[in-house]
Length: 249
Image (cartoon, rainbow, N blue to C red):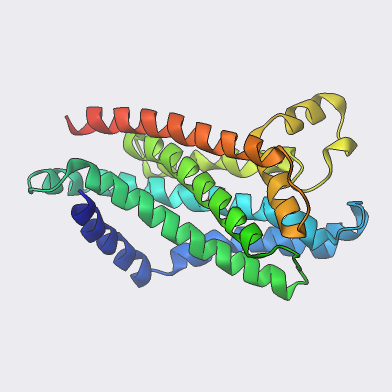
């Protein structure tokens, strides 16, 4: 299976290399939001002693991932409708290799987009006190979160009736960080909105990333963030695998 997945992953990555606009398009919206909120709204938002770009970046990274995984559903839908799955099933390769190739392609493409966004943030004044372990922890959380959302993307990619339907599912995921601590402290929100914001996964993940970047203690927050990421990953993987098996049976 590993060899088959590696070959199919190379095929998918070559497609991305031939059309880099996919990664550019994925990064454009998060970068636009970063510019808008830092240079237009940042002066009006109180975040304590932290520079607003430092406060904002973790949430922008989450939005980057949410935007990027819509392309996973899109590519999966096109392969399914184009008969690629049927052709590969007639060959002596592991059936799951096709699906894993799409998932790993999503991971690679999203990591490239995240690097682009971080580089832009550095040009805008983002600074971090994180050491090597802190950066590795940030990378680990982003990787797990990307895999979790990617497996969610697999489900509409396999079940959608149209290209628009395959990619439109990402819109609520992109909106979710706006009702979290990503842009403003939750203390400033009305009570019902604050209750939701403080108990949804994005807030714990964003707060953990922010503390890691700042070189501050993360406490038990990192375990809450990891629990959300791993929990979503496992549930999404189970449902996506079930849908895939029904689709190819």
